[in-house]
Amino acid sequence: KQEVTQIPAALSVPEGENLVLNCSFTDSAIYNLQWFRQDPGKGLTSLLLIQSSQREQTSGRLNASLDKSSGRSTLYIAASQPGDSATYLCAVNNFNKFYFGSGTKLNVKP
Amino acid sequence: DGGITQSPKYLFRKEGQNVTLSCEQNLNHDAMYWYRQDPGQGLRLIYYSQIVNDFQKGDIAEGYSVSREKKESFPLTVTSAQKNPTAFYLCASSIDPVKTGGDYEQYFGPGTRLTVT
Image 1 (cartoon, rainbow over the protein chains, first blue to last red):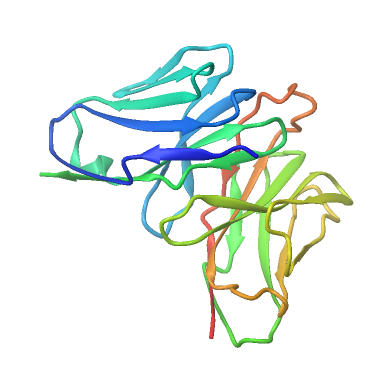
Image 2 (tube, each protein chain N blue to C red):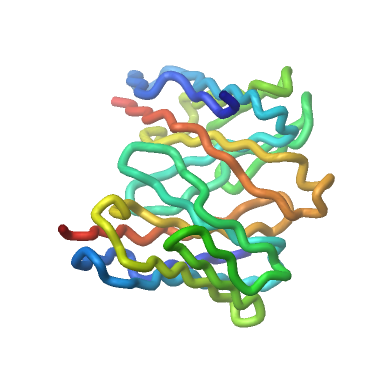
């Protein structure tokens, strides 16, 4: 069964820092990987989706990379802002199921 | 506006009662999913449906039931057999995984927080 791990579980940084969130998975036979943002008590908002054939995907200050063979993905956030404070989850797609990590809770201090 | 709606946002029930959570989507998606989220944990799949009148158990289906009578709707019933029903429940939808060869993304509703005492 697919296992997804996110490190670190929590991260607190001053505003303006660049930061990296990590996601690892045990089964490399994935179709894609999706990064989500979740605010407290809310649903999930999709940030980026990387297809299995892609190496990276960018949206604004966010860049996600995928190394399928090693079972790793990173989410890079440039010039962090207090509004980036949220929990970030990664999910890997094994055809008709997504498997989720437990998330990284990010706090960006003003 | 296209999207997924879940109701109610908060739900309180006494132990031993069944409760039904609503999920509706107007994205014309074929597939719908129910997840459970507990504090500090990732999402776990309860049930999913890829077509009307058909659904499959996910990883934690015990104590839950679903129906899929309409493409737009996928209600989840939390039965009295579910030992720890207090959690945050999220509904999601996507286009049919079979049609895309497995490459698709999921869209989520705002969630329902269920508290059972």
